[in-house]
Image (cartoon, rainbow, N blue to C red; front, side, top):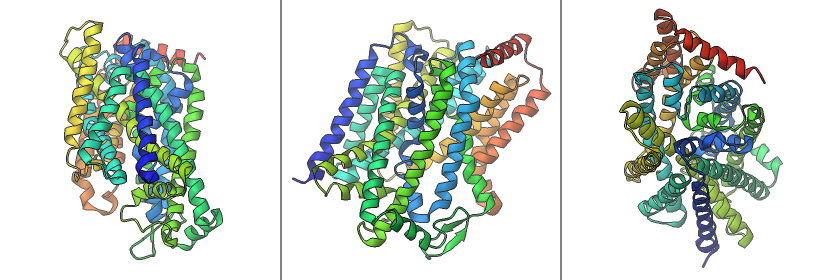
Length: 511
């Protein structure tokens, strides 16, 4: 039998078993729902940084970004990476420490908890709206992860799509349901290491087969518009098209999404020591910049390998790493094992996002809707059972939603990113930095941002021209305007809320 049919599956199965074992080990540390959903605020700086970035990058890092660079060159991939790198850094710089302090001050263990407790929303209106938004976007977002796993194994090994998807979902459910937030965070650390190893191994192997770094750069510079940030290569005509200022701004707007991503900002709330956030910020920022740069360069390498005939011309450019890894596996047992780790890295991208999304969606339903809005009375044991039960139900819904292998479930990812960025991002910034903001303004901003995402995506953007921009940008601005306008038109926050805000600011700047 070939290396592909034996070594690669064994490597991946060993990786999956390791994830389940980690979940079982961490299950003993979950004494209450705070442990299950936030790890008891005990994360160290390294785990905080890498789990946040692993849960962020998803399949996009190992498939989407190299695919864009492979096909059209550096402009779209480069500006997207710049926007995401800037968003990552600014999120850690401005939001992380203040949210860590504020969330503990108001006793919040979920994002909807924080919004409700920050504005002393006794009627739980903010909590309910935020929880529903998380469910609306995260259930299909999670489904995209399950679908990706099914398609990955189906493409590589010819496994039946549904069987592969269900097995992947069971593994994710198993370690997340047993170990909760700590298991998800620690497995995300492992997954970030595997993702890094995958990127490095592909770039080293690819450069060696392409004829060296010089050959790769010469090819990129020879293609019209390919090696540029102001023009984009048109593979159909072989020419170059301008990448104008409006398109650049729209692409950079991806970075705004970070301020509202529940599965990322939860890591800020969970770090053990607020004064170690600077360390986490440095680790996260460096890793993001290096990993995205390497991913883009892999696209450049793949373009040359295809031109040379080493790899076939790809109808689906996102498969460039998969095809390179399969080619690698044909060069001996050692490289077959490395190829297995590459596939495990792709799987890690999907799993690291899915586990975090499952926890965020589960906490929204069990903690915020059932216990918060509907006042369901549960003791700690019942709360843990409820948390795990809800997580399982949401995962099953995700599997059902991803059942059709031909569905375009991946399209929801960019839309969900815009949805969270526009609904939660402006409200989060106002809650943390503007004392005059109030509950009415927060509700208005959340609703205005969410509505504008739909209106722009399915209405205004279809007008084309200057309106054909990423919906996150206009929706984010709309939400900010709504927060400011409504807050100023309604009563100022009570003295107790204002004093609480001042106490948090004082604590943030005390060390």
